[in-house]
Image (cartoon, rainbow, N blue to C red):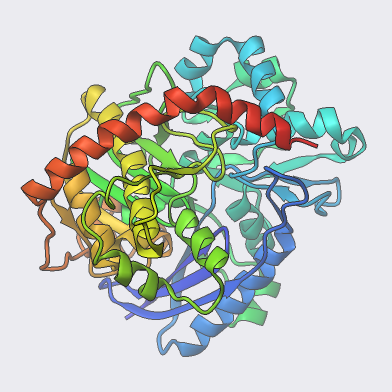
Length: 497
């Protein structure tokens, strides 16, 4: 049986999975890399680190395989900006999805295009994480670097270029640039002209399962790949994770708690939120769309808390102790705005906090309140989706939020919906492998590929009593941001150099 490879160029590392065409995972490897924060609110990485880590992870997986690789699919962190010069060398470290330095450029984009027009064309307002304001920031703040730019790529597409020599992207990942016409599923001449960004800088746009090229001879030989193995367009990590969990039809919702938190619902039509509080993007399924709510620091909040406590404490110890704390953490609420916030506030200056601390509260209380606050933030996105008429009948949990019983229980009780999980928990890399199977001809289409997905027997149902407690606490949570926004803004100003 042939094997399909899925490559995920994530925020903390590159992951590769090998998947038999029957759907079983046969190999898995990860290689980490660092993240630089040269100033508060900045986040950068060296793109060459992505490629180095990807090669190492590919070598490990390929070395474990008994069968030949039939195709490769790519996914990765969205929005990042890789700037290449005329020799296709990297000009400077890439600006990442969680980088908040571009607020002034977002204001300029909104003024040039118009807020309503921007959402009508691109499905989204101008947000600091997107690629377009990063390009304008380079023009405004680093003109010498800007003068050298000849190509702008997204993270996974830089890895594609190193692997195949081809410059290409896909509609789902391109949706997060603020430069794509969502109806046409291609670059918007109107937006590019308004922002004075050359169309020649941007790669050709494909659909997720389309072949964008083949592994070049040099990389294929060094990695042990067969000559000319096809490489699928793939997609942004959230759209491809949705493929990997079967979120390819109406009524299904994925809830991902990784570094960020994401609620993802499939839609057949382009369904933008007029206020821009949630994203409307192209799906990795050809011709389809999705809406998406994003909490910037979800599992990232728990990681920050663990690091603050010291390296000796494990996640299992933290979460295990939190499971013994009563729902509501004895009147303690956490705002997970450690990196600003996207849904629903669109505020890079938002700041995190515990509210309601007393001398009774222990480390376990703070941990549980933190986890509850992350899910409260995601619930705000769910309510917006439902207000737009998006059907949400079943939730499929992914990421860290799928593996831990407390995370699953919190999601069921706070969303008020049953929580399922798939047997394959490899995340976006698994979905990328399925898209590779369509490109390689192993599956007819994405729906056929997703028919290989199976679910765990254990389904977590909402508990009425706990849901009642969380309903009251959620009301408090939802009121805190509006009441503290001005003070958050002042603190952010005070912290600026």
